[in-house]
Image (cartoon, rainbow, N blue to C red):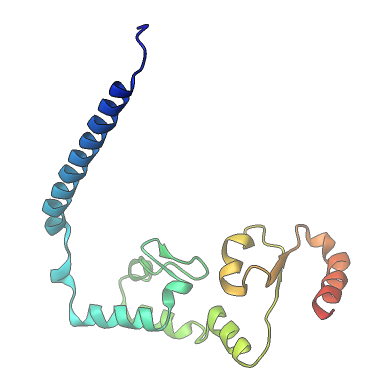
Length: 162
């Protein structure tokens, strides 16, 4: 294996690899086109389901809730709510009616509309995962240990009012 790697060899590897991945792309595309009709659920989308999806989108429910793993994690997962409440439509209606009418996101929007600038102080170490979506990158602070609160809060107040 003492042969020298030449331009010709490199070109052949490039073209051969390009052809291989192009053919792989075509095969996977063909497979996807043939598999999707078997997995398609369009027949189950009734007008009631379409109305529920519209309601979900208009109220930005995905901004707080998850549905089958998709969405934010501020509020309860809604994909299994029917089985969790004993397959009862009345229980689900009660669950929905017991929820706050304005979630955190809506309350923050209302505060901003009034000219207020909300700011969050938290001890939640995972806050960096979700608070930037609500308060922006500079709209919150994480206090790493609750015992630091008496020392940190006056400094934070001075910084915010300066």
